[in-house]
Length: 424
Ligand SMILES: [Mn+2]
Image (tube, rainbow, N blue to C red; front, side, top):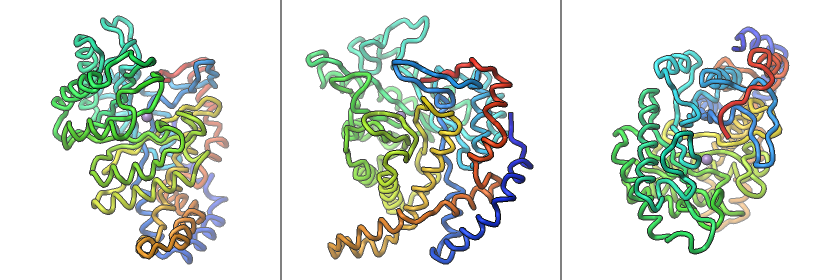
């Protein structure tokens, strides 16, 4: 299904006067509102193709119905989100869950919906039917060369699909590691992973980026072969200029200072992509900003500071992606909330008075530095984001339109109650 533009306009009408009042107030408070609205309009967040269905835990999964049955329907769902919020104009595909068997057709569907293809994701954390070598004890870092070669070949295949779709990046999250002390030799595992990454890197087109994602634990619970940002940075530094580290907010040990990690990776020119989610305990994959919105703001503060220092374009010089799991919410409602939370943190970070902050830092004025950051964080920037949406043809209140138009009921009507989307 698609939402009629007239319906969005009709839903906006009764909200317009109040919106203009709130926007006018902010214009008086903030001198560069037009610049921020422009930056918000350009800033697009990629939706992961595996997050359009209900997520689950190892204990159970409770699907809500109307889940997309094909890649086309997944794109259709992202098209719905983008029509409402005008901020999710990209998709991050996962192979083999979303093989584009007719790439030209998939490209056409995506472009009709205004969607681009962000990083492609490979999967060597599961065995697929008919697969010769098992990944039970690893893939790119496996002790057996034939298994490593199979995993390399899979990544080359993912790049092939990506090239057909116009993607420009490959994300590798390597689940390899060990569950018990003594199970593997850390140096040998590192060497094997590096050699395998090297073969993939050699096959990378010149205008592509390779993102190496790290994760501290799970599914392996004693060691992970790309366990933290330092290990990822070792690999990406040795591989070359097209290799970058990808930060997934949920992949750190508790209380890690992610904003500092981001600042240092950017300083090294090695931060390439981002996976947004939130968590209370581990890799909980909750909605971005639902638990620690201040941390999200602080991360964006460092992202902007670091990207500006390197003259990077906020919108295009980083892969901005959501990586979350929707176990109890409607996946599409959750994704609307996620994109909103990301844009709020981005807009708040754009408000930070950087010259005053630098002065406070240089004078060791701790109180003033905190005041400057928290002033930006405590500003309600939602009218700026609503205005960016409105100018791009989106909804002033995307979630309200989603509910008013009974989108989920319509999807259940079209697709049925028991459809299950491929994914986690
Ligand atoms: Mn991730």
